[in-house]
Amino acid sequence: MVYHSVRTLLDSNVNPNAVLYVSLETPIYTGLSLEGILGYFQELFSHKRDSILYVFFDEIQYLKNWEVHLKSLVDSYPDYRFVATGSAAAALRLKSNESGAGRFSDYVLPPLTFAEYLMFIGREAELIETVPSENAGVNDYLAKDVDGLNEEFVNYLNYGGYPEAVFSETIRRDPGQYIKSDIIDKVLLRDLPSLYGISDIQELNRLFTTLAYNTGNEVSLEGLSQSSGVAKNTIKRYLEYLEAAFLIKRVERIDQNAKRFKRAMCFKVYLTNPSMRAALFGQLDIDSDAMGALTETAIFSQWQHSQQVELYYARWNNGEIDIIHLYDADQKPAWAVEVKWSDRPYTARGELDNCVDFVRRNPNVKQPLLITSRTISDEYVIYKGVTFEFSPASLYAYTLGVNILRGVEKEKSLKLRPEPPQLQ
Image (cartoon, helix red, strand yellow):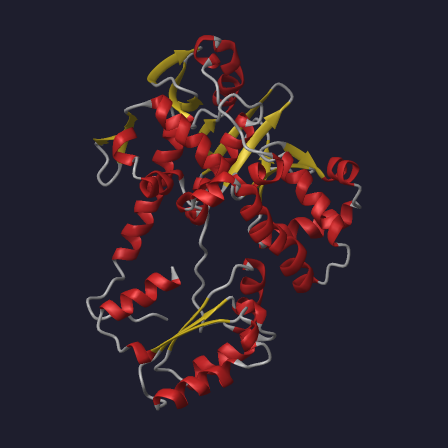
């Protein structure tokens, strides 16, 4: 994306000598300050303080106290545009929040949505039919070939969250090597320990491996402590670190009456990118036992592109609902989704009793209540007085991703200006 930004500047007739790109993980820059690097650039091309320059510092977390240096540069050169990027999300967010208030604009780049994945591989038009909806700006979508869509959904779960894996046949043949070595190990073994002073790296690694294997399942501090051999207080801290690093997402539990617990003993943990599980434990096929949990993980992954919606799950003695959104004003349930990777509930209606129970206790929940399936689509199913809609999980993931993304694009389009790019 940085390279694309540079290309956009050059295509907009910005002088190439006014654009500086530096990757700070390159050994030759070790020991140099940001001021020093910028000074060499200014001297080389005789740039003045009031010149219009575009400066890209990539992998900025490798420079000690980068946030102090960057803040000083932003203050000293108001006509320069600075972009700082890094893969250590926790480090960037922590440091920018500490010293960049009012000066830095943070942009989080979530994993690819399923819709983006289909766009990238060029199969969106082949597999998806767009149907104009009565709601302005929101379309409905149908699967032209649900088996083909499911095949690509499985590929998406295995490696599709990362653009490099989508475009590189070498990485696709062995995504575990790339995803584990270049992403997971880098964050777990280097970035998090250095940022938070973690001394027992293997302990953190054991906990993350346990969480990755159980993505989409309910866990407790007690259970995690027993299965990973890590003390509960330490687990609480590690969970905060892993969430700050965007490796996991915790989801709170509510009860059958949509009430939150004063002491949350149990919660669900999702990998932010379902491809991480396949990298650690091997790739899935369409009939793998883990497909249900990974499908749920993928659905939650689509929601990462929306900063507006807080999601919960409900569990009680006789049932569970996977995804629930509460109204902000009164904290009553607005809508619910039960995620399945199976067509069985369509005929074995007794498996919907938990949903019926929840709707009866919470009559404000929007109907039809959505049940994802493996292949079945049916917009109108009534069971025990409750209306259900069945939709393939792969199609729901696509619809969710594309609508959220286009909503984001619509918001950003209001801020676009016709003059040449002003990167900040």
